[in-house]
Figure 1 (tube, rainbow, N blue to C red):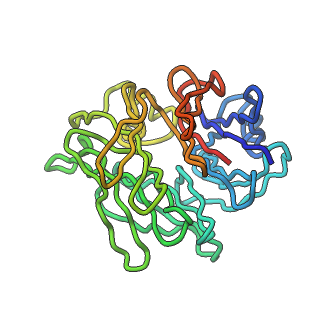
Figure 2: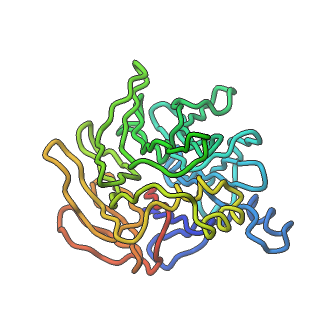
Figure 3: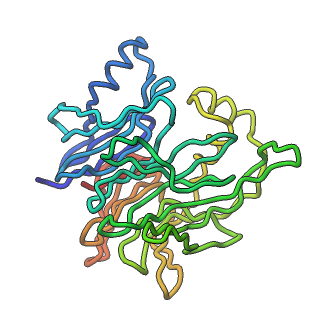
Amino acid sequence: MAEIIACLKQGKVELLRGHGPEPLVSPYQEQQIARAQGVLSARIVGLTRGRTSGELCYAISSENATGVFAQTPGSHAERRLFQATAAQLSELDVSFGDEALACTVKGDRGTSAIGLLADDGKGVRTVTEGDVVDCMPRWAPGGRGEIVYASAGVGRTKSGVWVGLSPFSLHRLRFSDNSVEVLISDAKYDYLAPVPVSESMFYAIRHAYRSPRAPSPFTLILAAFRGTSGEAAQAAARVPEGSELVRISPSGVEVVMEGVFSFDVAANEDIVYSSSAGVFRLAKQAGKTEEIAQLARVERLVIC
């Protein structure tokens, strides 16, 4: 099957496969939108490659529930994998080795944790905890026993009011001994959206850290519209203009590309990324960049 690049933007998914963008049609999402008389009441909030070639898994948030679905694009044969009414899930990543989905689980008082959803009938279980924002999980290569994710501490006043976040650092959780290793941390930068390609090398998005501050009125309005807390909305908006795609290895941190909003790494280590100008491919061997589509500011990008 030809390569498909799936792009999540503003609650919907566009598919790129050798021609212009075409929408991923989710019968569940379309049904919810029809019930709301055309309002985007059901938003896709997580996207990952599926367990079989060409398949996509995605999370849809509507009202107070989150559903996880799978389909092969073009088939319209949507399978519901999970329905949660007590947990709000986003930012999916599938493990081929452990046959589980990692996700971000919204917590109380502006926090979030990394969760696992497996075929064991137990639903979602969280594997991190604390007064933190843990998010953007990615399985280690091979998808067995390790997850890399972004983490930031929550700053509060003496009375417990949320006031901001510390810089995001990258952590690795090993399930064999439940150990957590800090991979990179810098008081000057946020590190987000890690994609590990080996035991010692991974890619991430980096941008200059902004000092903690309370949510602005605009952030609170946006949060109310999206049905999230002001704290979570502000945390989710931390990939601004000026972000850099970086390669992190034992040799240090190398800037690969500037102005990157989201990216994924292919099996041959080509990089597909989104900027304010569109979606592009950076070929590892040739070192050349080619435009794939004029689809700007993609929030999540997946090669499948």
